[in-house]
Image 1 (cartoon, helix red, strand yellow):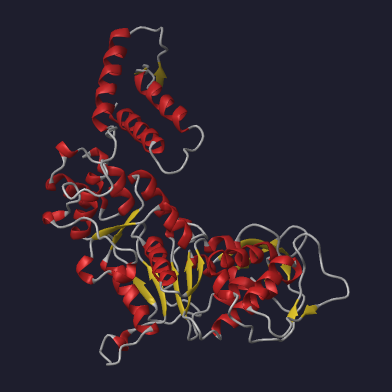
Image 2 (cartoon, rainbow, N blue to C red):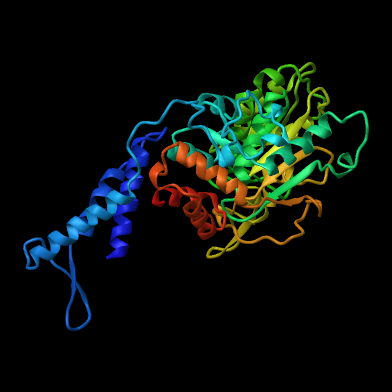
Length: 457
């Protein structure tokens, strides 16, 4: 019976969250909620043989069914989210964090934040996030925005350390210090599930682009190894994926078009042509050259316009970006661990057998995966993609590159709980320090689980 109560409560919360979310609800969410309530109202009996049998609405035990229905409604009502409208965007009387400290930091950029403002929230509009990250927002960030009905993120100490690391690289201070000796140009963000790796990477990209950096941001690295066509490169042992290559070039232009128009090409070697997406090889031509005076924008447009050149342009773009000195260049790859496992593609070996193709055998992944260079690069692991546990010493990655991102500590959990209280995910009359600490210890600091359990306070 308790299981049916919780399923009913969960369905009610899901329907309410989608009704008030920033994005449109998925089809069938309301019907799922109604079906869950219908099941909760149907009593169950067990026959003599031990089999579970469900009574119909016209069978006996009507009084029991009515009692179960009323108790279910009472239980679900106690777990439902509040339906009152959200308060004003900023209200000093409500924007109170743990210990009476301010809950929000009013700023236009992450660059202005100091370490004293750690464990506070920064509020940007959805338009601002989409403008700075047109390639797409991480799934965890979108879910947080939808359920809290606000596009705010918490500034954690781990993010400030990551930001300061790259800020010291691009703008080193006049006086050397011990901190400067520990900077890393290549970092792999690792940590347990739902510890905020993807959100931290997205915040870093937002900061870098506000500072005028040239950032190649890949929010879904798994897409480089799945879907589309794949062909054996005619000039080597790698495999070409022209559909993904064209998507990579299009995404890179979304935010960086103006900057790329002022960056000249520095490599004028011929670009090899491969098979186009579904059209085969180009007859009589095996390479192309960029004319002198071309910019990186011209190079990318060529790869988008000609499907035979898309993979070769992506490979050339990686080399060109290493030579850019006018602006800082950052490579930010989410779901980076997918580049160290097998792809979706398989090579036919015999009539009845195939060989799985590793991600490193793809031309696009092979050109961007390595961290053994002098460029600034951040890769974030995504354990939700379920690619398995990787070994500690990854190939083509420095031994000291891996940085473990922790889950919420007690201070961060306190700020998160007060933020959920501010956004009406938690009933104000039921909120207490003892209760939010319970969900913190039950979830072990897991951000997704804390958000899911917050309405049950």
